[in-house]
Length: 249
Image 1 (cartoon, one colour):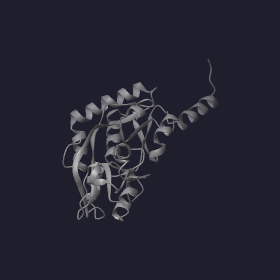
Image 2 (cartoon, rainbow, N blue to C red):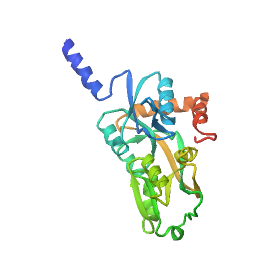
Image 3 (cartoon, rainbow, N blue to C red):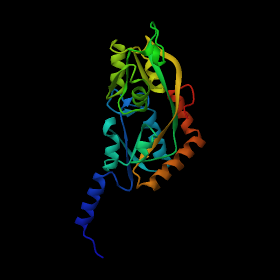
């Protein structure tokens, strides 16, 4: 069957608009969740997630384009074909697993309370009665805060983690519930220097993985093989050490 050049060109343009070119993967991250994903002073996406994405693409010998996407729209964007995968510190949950497929985890997470150094902040419901606590919207931390403490505290949810930090620093919150590792990074900044972790870690067996469309099982397995390879080669440990003095794998 003969196919015209015009037809082939049009087909490539259509495939390209959905991020499905054979030689390029489009990978989405949020860009507002330091140190895992953030935008640097030159406007480029950086962070642990971005470095892991690049290492995986290098291992797969695949060209990749890293794109930014607001958190609330990141799964709809994947399902609509605007990119091929999400590497954005996304927790595996039953709700998400019904609409996307997850790879093997590439790190594990715990939650933590954050509050001012010079103020007592108990972490049980009785001690927190009447307090105002914040978390990022549509996250495990936000869900935990609503489900476990919503009857006892005023819950404020934010579109980004950075905005939650801003309200805490400004005194508009008594404390935060946050993923521990990004909070650890913020506490080392000037803005976070007057704050600290409170109480014990909240271990909810939270596993972080790459999301792909449920129809893309071959891509899922390619990511799994590449992840295993960068762990075995030591590349993962190099990236880990760039951001944390302890293993998060």
